[in-house]
Figure 1 (spheres, rainbow, N blue to C red):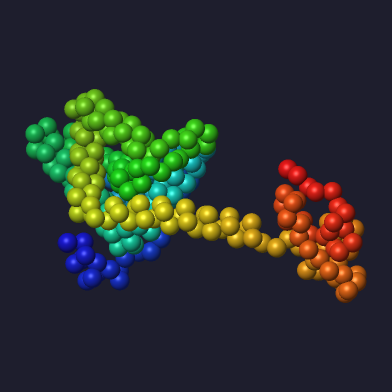
Figure 2: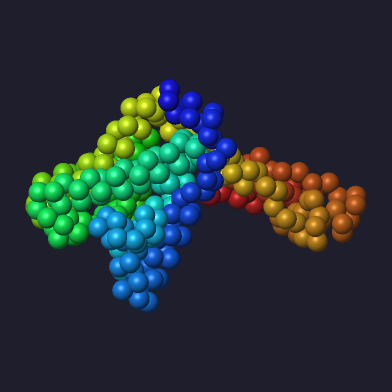
Length: 289
């Protein structure tokens, strides 16, 4: 498998916790957009302007975020971080790096290809209107997440539980709708090329990592097992007694610290862990839930 060979050779160069870096870049871009829209414009991926010296756009377009609403972008970035970290845990740091950066490279190449074709056929003014970003790359990142965890539940608007695979179908339907109805202006063609490059990246990794899908199911089982383990440990935690004592009567509340000669027993007829001293073990009223 080509990814395994690349990982053996270049795995040590992978950037750990890349989802956090992606979210930070988007957050920084959002702040710039709020403070200085003209500066934010200078971050965007535009092949024409890059060819005329603004080469920083090859990197800064990664700061161009998906939304301009403060409330909405907070939820979007948290969601991106959640699915990104889950994929990084299952795929491994190197594979997640490869998915994202190959997608970024594909977006750049697609932008320049679009610019070149439009310039040749319609002139440089038309080609200069080509702009692209990572919006559709992030949408296919969600498709990758859904392919790994199809039965995982998320809460839509923090209220409605829905399985990830159904959201993925909506994601795919939205991409198809935008592709066919984005038109054939410079902007519309840019959108079409962005969608195609992002989907090609998804398909490349989906078919290259079919075996790794089993890791997704294992990851879900492992997460559920850890959650059950924590709940079990919580149930098994010994409740704190008075003054740090080990035993305390549920009726008179005396402990072995009050009288070292006292004996304590749990009542098998009470619903719950109720402990009684020798004076109240047989005389107490049984607790029933």
